[in-house]
Image (cartoon, rainbow, N blue to C red; front, side):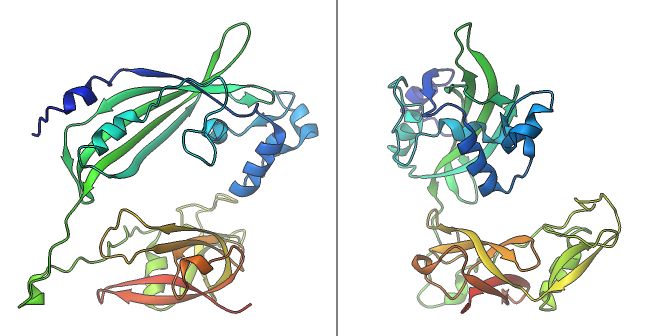
Length: 323
């Protein structure tokens, strides 16, 4: 077990609570509406004042899952609003990085809620460094798991009130070294295969469809509605009578990300991943092919194509097509 001298400074931060980071704005209907549109949330409790007035709350409230969004610093890192403290709760990550652990990946994000947040409340959070693990070796590389707990409060004249909490854990690590090719015998280099999906009785039809060159979308035999990802029960009518429909695989790019780092074999980088809105109405995440990341545009038309990797894994990928 590694016991570096510099770890003593890192360990000394465990248990330290960093001061207030305020929200830029009070909780307000405009931001709630925009968040609901982006996330596809249509609960009238969040956006319809007349409906909200008939509920136990008597007024609009904010979606609980939006809690973290209120206190994000903005487009530029460490661009915190007036009143926030000067402390940097992420300095522990900087100390680890300075010792040769440059990469970071989030591994846990767990939100809990004490109550709904109402319009006009001003929020802030504090950060507790809860734990720094021993040095661990993972498939990504070797490093340290750092756990932080952000406690969210509503500022009130009569006394601030806790409204929720976020446990956030990352790994700060040195990327694993890839095996160097052997000049005389390339066969001596182990081939890293694409990871296989976990297949259950609920998802087997989908992966068997991929092998057959079919994009199968789960369909309820009772209400005929579609859903993805597959589930053991219909999310619309709660029926257990489920089948599937073969989709032509045509749709548009609803959203996308481009993965740059850390580079994990055997994937190519940059690695664009899209959220596809099929013409049937459901959304499916999938890799994007045949396009430069800089050319990706929300709303562009795409078409499914199936590619087989390692002679054993067939995946649905999507390629942009002319409108």
